Length: 460
Image (cartoon, rainbow, N blue to C red; front, side):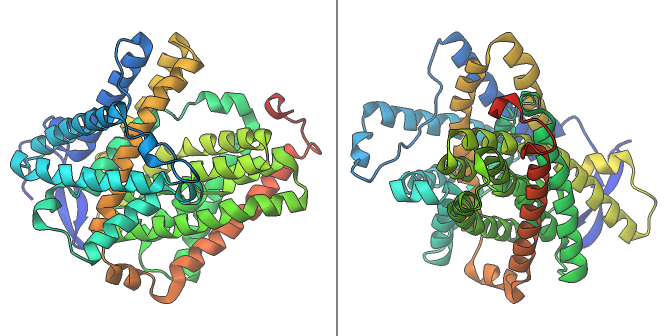
């Protein structure tokens, strides 16, 4: 690839071949997907925050309330709900379509395709809001299933494919999610949360990496690191960020998320039962749940089973753990850049090459977190930030549903079957999760048993 002017170049990999990749240009800010995802995320955050703080208008996105178990879905299907659903579609359609146009796509190709993808997302939200589905299986599972059913039965029509852009929606959703990751959570749970979440997590990732590469000898390194992050941090979100940093294929991401979801459901049901039988109590039990169950939603459900205190501790530990997403994604980007550079036999990695490889949307994730923690929170209140997050959370969920439906649409069962060949990936997850549970329990025992340190005021 030719260099334009004095623009520096770095090495990237396309189709397993090393090619020269262009360095940063100012036009990237309005043309590259990572930057467009940041702007989309910031626009949603800015409008959502302004709407809540001023109370001048309603910016909430459509939310499907739980139905079933004696409650009919049609009870919520009123004029207000339909209006909010239409508004949600229009806001997302405008933002993602403008971004698609700036990326070089055509309006007539993207907008109709996006409309159908949004309809599929509505179906996903409808199914996942059903009482039983909502209690035991997350929306990510149903998004994958709906997409897979379409792609493996009737097939994905050619005119729908322009809107099937997994990373585009995921990146925007993660930027929005950044606003909910408050650094103040570190203060509220102090060294207890840091010891459980920040020390154990990197050790588990390193263990799974060496176990996967040296013991199981899995050749797919991006899959190993993506699955390791999903296991040790927070499932879907961590897999998304680290998958982007390691240049994992969509099938790798789909496999990692599928394995994570399956075992998350099992752990969500059985871990509280085992904890209660072992007599660990709500403080230690909640911390163990927060540090080992992949999904934040599943952590909340499992913690609730043990009690209110357990739920509080579990969510705090998971929230502190979630802060690591950006740092881990950055570290993975640097690590994989260095490995690829060394394989070419060229000189050591430069800052420009790391910058090229770094998923730029992670910067948006950090910025959103910093703004929420050190600007909005001090100027308003925790209640206001919570209200803003209630609005933003639904936009994040819609973006993620669009993304995981896209993964399903872009995947076929034959590819998944090939990925599962040998069962090494499941072995990697199971061994890694068992190691995670043991290590987390040791940290929880030392910090929260009361035998070595006084219990924190939050859960005393």
